[in-house]
Length: 266
Ligand SMILES: [Zn+2]
Image 1 (cartoon, protein in one colour):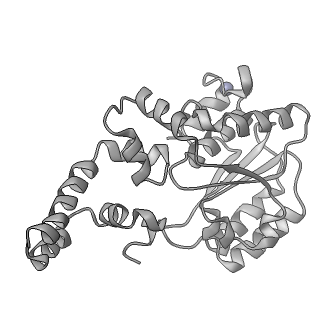
Image 2 (cartoon, protein in one colour):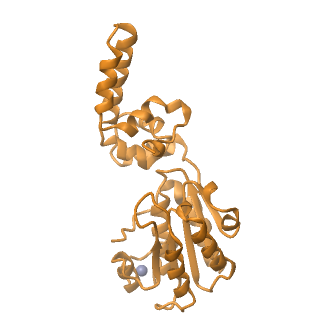
Image 3 (tube, protein in one colour):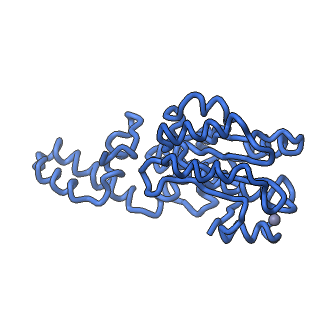
């Protein structure tokens, strides 16, 4: 099910920019939504798709949630909406997925409005798939909008990037993130959670419910015990090795290196 969630405060500027372009009839055929993990790029893409497909968007371009198109979208059965993603997380998007999409792309929309396709993560396109997509980007069809989402746009071919209008999400100001976290009910150490999650509010929120902070405290205690009290480092290491927190562990220890936790285990 496509759940359309309300606007995140740090999305407002890009949202308004897009709605203004829509009002002027100047929407790009292809958008590239970029920014770090945990900023809600996926949510933005879904909300935008819902807005474009809705028959009567309400104030600020918000999808009404009640029309036939909104219902079809929520049920993931809208005939003019498509998602292209890897068959398995972490794998490539293959050329067949793009060919299947481009074959249908010349058809007119079934509901008489926009046709919207989300490609995510766009950097998972393999070379053949990217080349195939490039042909579509070079010859766009009216009322067709492609939303490419990527945390690593540098991995996309420059030819693809140059044919998309870029909408970048910067990491929000700490004060805005803290206010938002408190609205979500996070009362304990929002600053630390943000520091541990590279300032990404959604990741900080997810971590607030985990044992991340408590485990971090325990690990710091154990580490200082090695230095101060002569604890056995091998014993400490063997406990750490068993932790279900491999990614968080890396996050805690390598915080200052701008560590990319997605690389753990690769
Ligand atoms: Zn609607």
